Image (cartoon, rainbow, N blue to C red; front, side):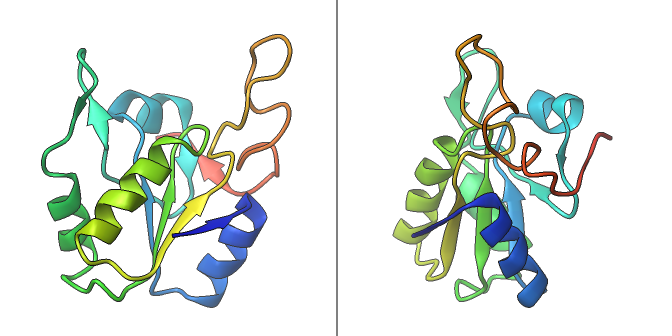
Length: 130
């Protein structure tokens, strides 16, 4: 798995339009906090117990058109869940997996707020709320 800063991930997505951009946060995070423009949603964890989605790999496989060689760029809130998601995809045979460092909202600042130090939104990359 290769780790990319948000701006590097954006550049890769522009250079390789066939790349699959997956936001692996929860449904609530994806829909209510916002998400990168062009990102598809496949939650790694969800529900009140934060259970691992047993269908995560198969959902990504379906979104990829059953092509494990297709580049997959993963993003979560801070870049931690996306590493776990990437490891699952690599274990399942995906060969070009990328993790977005600092994620969508970035690291916490001294006042426990996000999007103030780093991350997709902090870098001013395109995002939306649906």
